[in-house]
Image (cartoon, rainbow, N blue to C red; front, side):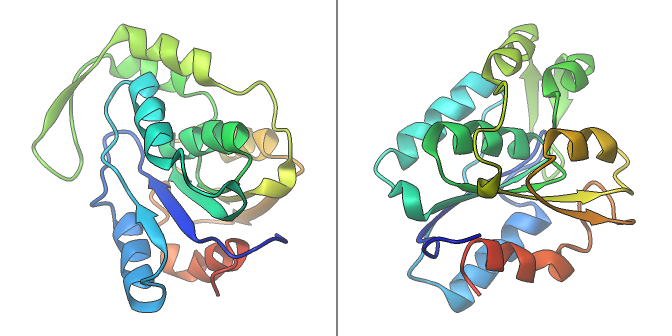
Length: 196
């Protein structure tokens, strides 16, 4: 990816996840050790997709588009795509959800978060919000790096590959949905964002 190094970085966690995810904490630690000057935002996302996007857009409204980067995992990868299309910034997608309206419709009801005992309600209208948010096409494939695992036990890597065809894609022969081997891919993430 050409362009200036990222100065502002947003991390968006997945469904049922939180800023306490392993990947989010690893990124925060790398930045604290290597780039404490960089503006970092890793918010807890509300269950409502429309509210999540609205809150994030409000937070980043004054960020410089050319040097803003987004990392999104799973549902956060879908959100990162929505935001990259709206803001015209770079995005790193980690096993991104492609059709979350379809996939999450089976989770309507009360759900428990992964990193705590916190419970939340995933409402039927949230599925409609996801449908409305979905970008029809990607306007600039140069903006995206997708890291996709064939071993993803939640999402189909073929569907992810098709969605991000033409983008820079790192297709992993194994790994898993959580990208438990994220440490190995950190150099690629940093290089794409101009941070190495």
